[in-house]
Image 1 (cartoon, chains in turn red, brown):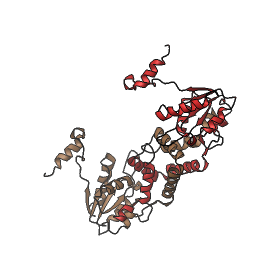
Image 2 (spheres, chains in turn yellow, purple):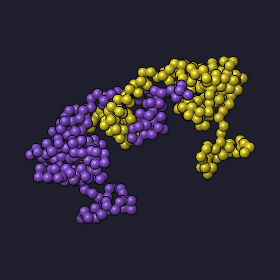
Image 3 (cartoon, one colour):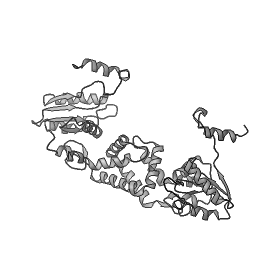
Length: 201
Length: 201
């Protein structure tokens, strides 16, 4: 029994590491490992190289808190991005999502999470001190609080709006009905917001 | 435009490598990379170690064609596995599936694929010569052809059955209705096989 459990322990460990990634389960992790085993040169070796490069070279941007291989990060270093407007997000994934939308040409500030009394995450656990520091820059005109539309995200936005009052114009993302969605499936709060903030056709 | 495309090129490359794995798409690959970025010690570094170990240590078993870190592989080296019965499979994934079923205590032979005229895969591209060599062992009593129940898998089984005739008893997996399936969703051929090969209750 012990020897049977030990069989393929190295491969079993790799499968369980992959299965722990979001979006993968044990079944897809197993298929991924089979794919890697049979495609060593085209798939396994390049993946090791890319992961190792990420591990050895990724840094947190000291200015905005984003993760990048360059310091300061590409967005902070880009002279074509406006320094007059700052978009505050919880995580790197939110920054990526906004960049994919290609609708924002200012800079970002990545908090690293949201305030959460239940999980014991307070202001000192987030990149808030550096945000207040950046807000003192007289060049800055507007700060968009783009935290998630969740309880924690909105709590964080309210906290930040209070701290930032008087330093710059503080705004938030519009609430409404997402493109492609059916009214029947939307929650009441979103519909109420969308009605209240209706726009001329 | 060039600089915008270059932004995050290293991370974009990692995402595209992960998205190429079966079971992952661009969206889940992106979530996996975000997970790895924020969990460097618990997730990224162990994954690099496990992948590197697989890359540097995995070998093809010279006897059965299985991929393992040991040579000969664990199953070939296990004295408690019967050398009298051999199960022929197309891929490592098939071997793993049969091992999970815990119903076979003999040894395996991994062909590395199936014959396929369309893709130009002939007998010389598969581990068939070594199978015929193993079949000459007088200790061997039975060879189970457990290739897939696909056109290519069955073509391969027919080809092997002919080559192996007179050397050992050649058998194949039973065909029938899988556990948990509904007859209404089964194809006609499977139902016809299941009827023809019905067993006393």
